[in-house]
Amino acid sequence: MACALAAGAAAAAEDREPETKVLAAGRAAMERELPDEALALCLRGLETYPGSAALHHEAARALLDLGQPGTAARHLETALEVHPDHVPSLVALALVRSEEGRLEEAARLLGKAIELEPRNAAARHDLAVVEARRGNLQAAIAEFRRAAELAPKECKVKYGLGSALEKMGKLEEARAELEAVERGESEADRWQLEQRIRHAENQLSVSGR
Image (cartoon, rainbow, N blue to C red; front, top):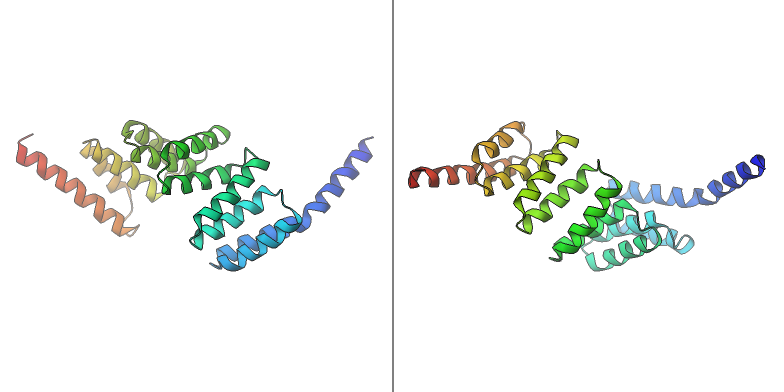
């Protein structure tokens, strides 16, 4: 019985080997910044493996790079129909919904992704951004802090946290986050946040607070 199960598992893995190769080729094309090639590879792969959540997700990544969010969303929805717990598709679809202004749905998708992978720093960062856009600054700060714990060297997390703190009027904490980022890392973001903090400090000085 054990031998039969082992043989079945080996056969299943062999059956999926072409899918794995197509997926790897698609990802390699994306790394080389060739989304057209990646999309063509994934679409060919989906002809054989229409139920592959990973291939649908990779096709969606290419489509987003090509400026086709609507078609990308349909691939992501299909991925989640066949694999509801596919975290990369949950996070990617949340990004599309956020860009569409459907922030409540984006937050729900990211919440599910975090429930499945609590240590997913990218999902927590994205949820923090969504919560900030919804005006839930306390929730945004909490998620930015969790993301920072998981990815302490990620500059966009520090800038996001600093920005949310600045909007809350917590200028000393915001400046601390700004100063924690090494020089040379995303200078445009650094400059923008620094100007906002200085403006807020000047406003407080003028008002005598």
